[in-house]
Picture 1 (spheres, rainbow, N blue to C red):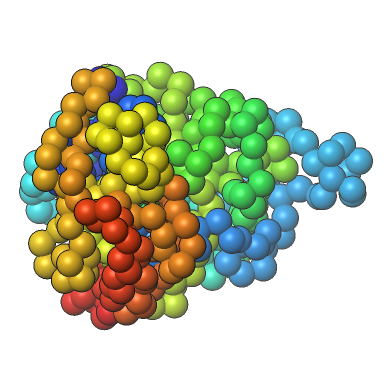
Picture 2 (cartoon, rainbow, N blue to C red):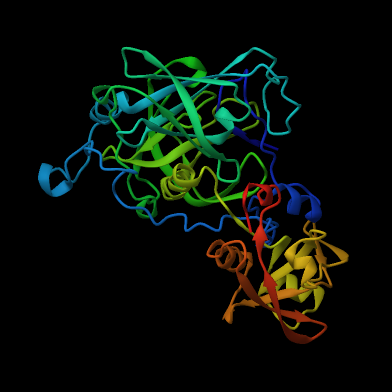
Length: 419
């Protein structure tokens, strides 16, 4: 079985991102990956972003000169060569070195050796405004005592301040004090416009080899990956452009030289690149970075269930009257769902070698709108904030009933000012 692994350097990787765990309760705790089993999904439905992930302007966090002219201006459809994209973006890509005096605890996300005290970690990032702010992956800087950033191909190094990090989306923002002529922010693109087959370029520091460019295409869109804390990151961009340990946090650029993603993970049985990489969409990165800059934290709505898609095939096997919706697989004790009386399945049924729990609530509508699967539940929670109410229509014992749930902040966020 292959693993999803962060792409920072081997001496400081924050761990191995396992494929979906077998137990549905464990998937509630660890977040979720979408996997196929007659359309079956087991994913931490409530443990998702409350942000609107892919609504992003075509400029960076503050105005920045575009890397390339528009299609109408250059007469070439906006397509640049790999060299042109690199030349336009390289000065805005950061080489990040992180040191920590403490011993990192063994981390299940780590596909490499655990970092030792005093070892330096490396990763990538990119400038997003003229105030010296740099976006990277949260797992690159997690636990850092000191952060150094090298900008430009001539290698000038600066001490960086961590403005904030969000492990749930794997996004962090750093800030450096540098002369204005040293800051060349990149322009953010629109990750909602990305299509399979689009050419892409990744720039970063794999294995510490600074300013390395690799190219490929978008292999798939709307993938589900997991952040370092196990929560689901939606709408990830899958690419075949080679990325490796040290690429984490670097920019994924489209054919116009605009950032459409933050390179974050690889799927690999060995820890090396096998042509399947994933980038956090810049729509997510932009919104999370904005909140981190403004408040130093990001709040995510929390429901506290894991679930599985109900398909006609599964409904037939377990003799359900409905053939679509979200089957509640587990309910986190003390969560909003638990407090509202949402019930999880108790009987385990094996279908094509995989288990699904039945006998619990089947969610068929959210806020009055029908949902056919867990994706519908996820999207509804994603649009909420901690403290909001959500109305779930559930099918239980042959009857429909409506349950109102007050969402809270994800566990661990309450002490940071969450709802």
